[in-house]
Structures are given as C-alpha cells and as structure tokens.
Amino acid sequence: MSDGRVRGLVAITFAILPPQLAGADERGRVAEWSLDAQTRVTHAVLDNGVVLHHRAAAGGPGRLLVSISLGGGRIEETAANAGVSHAALLAFSGAQEAVRGGDCEIATLAEFDALTLTLAGTVEGVSRGMERVAECLRRPRIEQRAFDAWRQRATAQVELLSRSPEYCASRALLQAISGDDVRVTPVTPRQLERLELSEAQRWIERLSREAPLEIALIGDVSWDRAKLLIEENFGHLPSRPRDAARLTNLRVLARSGGPWELRRPSPEGAQRSVSLVGFVHEGAGNARQQAAMELALRIVTRRADALRSDEGDVRVRAEHQGIPTYGEGGLFICGVSCADTRIAELAERTRGLFETLAVEGPTRAELSAAREGLRHERSVEVEDDRAWLRRLRHRVLRQSADAAAATDPLDEITGEEVRQALAACFDPQRTFAVMVSPSPR
Image (cartoon, rainbow, N blue to C red; front, side, top):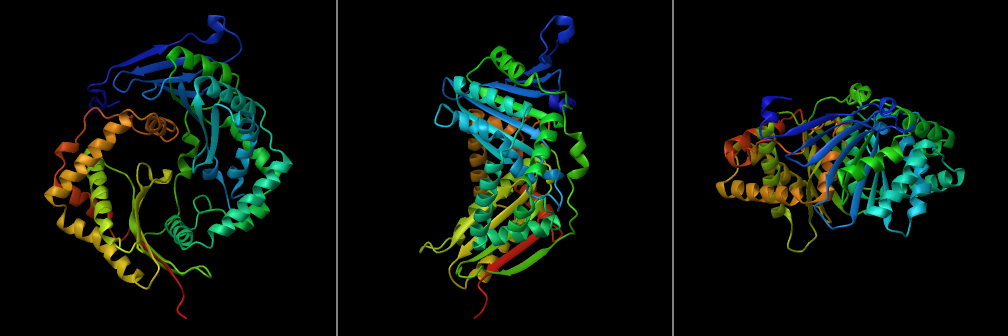
C-alpha cells in the first residue's frame, strides 16, 4: 500500500493458527484478518479462500444486511449460452421460499461479473437465511418446474420491454459501446428459448464449487459473532481462490471507438421519442481527478433539469451507470423523452450541456452547489448501511479502492479542473448519441 493510502490509517493485522494446529473441527476458519481503524471495517479470509468484510451497523438495532457474491457468471457467457447466469440463480429459490413472509428477504442478481445475493432483515432472520443459502451452495439444485416457469416469465418480460422506446434506446446503446457483446446486452427471447436446465445446473455447480466467494456483513452484530456465522455456514465449502484474477482477461469489450451515432424507429404503437446522449468514462486517474469528474457530472445533471417542460411532457434522466469492464468508470447518460417532434432539438440541447461545460467550465455558484451536494451525499453515506454494503461487497472481486480515502481533495478542486475532467471524457472517441422516434408516416 502506498504511503498516501497509509497516512491517517491504523491497520491491525492478525494471523491465525490453521485449524489443524488449533485442534478445530473440519470447517474452515478465519485464517487472517485486519481492522481498518479509519473505516471501522474488518477484512478477513477463511482458510478455504472465502473473503469476509464486516462493519458494525450505523442503522437500526437488531438489523442485519449481508451480501454474498460468487465471482463470475455473465462475464463468462458466450453467444451459445447467453442468459445462463440468470437461470443459475434459480438454485437459490429454495432459500428464498424458506424465508418468505418471515423476518428475512433474499434478493438475487446476475451482475456482469458476479452472482450476488442480498439478505436483509433481523439478525436472527438473516442468520437463518444464510444457513439456507449455504446449503444451496453446498448442494445446488434447479428444479425443472422452476426453470420452465422462470423462462416463461422472463420471455414475457423481455417481450413487454421491447415495446418501450426507452428500452430499445438502452439496448441499442449497449450493443454499440460493447461491440454487440452478449455479456452486456439484455437477453433476447431466442436466447432464452435455447437455454437448457442441464446447462444452468452445470453452471451453478461449477460456480458454487470453484468461484471466488466474497461476503459483506453490515449489521448489529459484533466481529466475533460475524466471524462465527461465516465460519459455521461457509467454512464447509470447497477451497477456492480468494480473488477473481481469472476474470481479468474477460474484463475487455471488443468495441471500436466512437462517436456512436444511432437512430432507431420506435416500437410499433409507441408514440414517445427518446434520446440518449453521453460518453464512456473509463475511470482512470487519481482521487483528485475522480473528484473533479464527480463534480462535473453533478453540474451536468443540474443543468439538464432546464430541459424539462412546464407541461410535464418532457422527461429528463441523467445518471451514471457503472460497467465493471470500465473499472470505476462506466457510462454517463443524459436521457430525454417527449411525446412530440421536438426530440431532435432536445437531443442537440443535451449535447450542448456537455460541450459548453467542457469549453467554459462551471460558474462559481455551480461549483459551490455541486461541492456542497456531494459533501452532503458523502456524509449521509457514512451512516448508511446499504451504502457500506455497496462499497464492500465486491472489494476484492473488482479490486476496488478502500472505502474511504486518507485525504479528501473535494474542497481544493477548481473550476478549471472540472472543465478539464469533462473535456477529457467528452471526446469524440468516447461519445454517443442514440435516438429512437416513430417512423415518418
């Protein structure tokens, strides 16, 4: 760790005797752990490779949040088995059903580079939920009836979404910036039809047996209790690598450079038009450069509000979407939709938001407001358990930076730095403009 990362950080690291020397039972135990005194997060590794992060809850007493992530999944898919990771999550249907209506909820998600389960509820309820999830990992099984029902629901949902101009615009954008990579673009009805239960079963068996497993636990439990919960439930799993180095070469998209300029017709019967304008942000740079970009995106978002109409027929959405292939970057999108023919004008005005800021920089008032808004957001997140869960759940799988930097350069960022940050990203090789509108009659 560099001197800059160590400054202001007190780390306490412990090495634990292996179980065979400590006379323990057959389950895996915590082999090493360290306490980050600045963030109050404990990081640990079991001797079977399972990674754990624990932080005492800042929220309500008696509550517990847990994230369980298997490294891999969609990032490993090909055109022949696209969608199999979504189907693989059916192996946890039994755990979800077992806690349904009780004091624990289990949500599943096939992310780009991980299959992630999130458990939320009381300490007792989530503890029981973890037992169910661990059992599914030890003996994963997908029922034919559940698979058939899932495929039918998923197909109907995709067909419904395909009638939405917003969905069509998003799909076209992802196809363009990824080089039509099936790992990034939404699954199609044809791909769902090709999937077989046996393939999904093999997929989840492999991941449960071999994939890196990272667990984040944020709640009203002590470190000793958290350690015991993880050891008892996940210490019996087979040994696995503690990181996702095997996925490194897959974190690449075979895409050409921009600009990506796309026009598509609206789905039949849809009258609204949609425009998506923005850029691919690859997330490089030091903490100062990243803070400048955060401020730039916040200023663009505020300026985008001016595109809304008093009548409410113009909808505006500015957001940052992360894709793990781009590290800490992703896509910054300013989306506009309307029910009339003004979409071309609005798309041009949206592009102007970026271009003007990249040339002229922010006003002093804009910079001050953006800085204050970002500072408030960060102060809220410090006490937000779900924010901590998001920060920690893929810390090792994605080699993320520490949850809190030793120094915060936010107050030192100048307007010129903000301008330069946006100008570097809003480059033709990184920009996109997607428009979906009804075909002329």
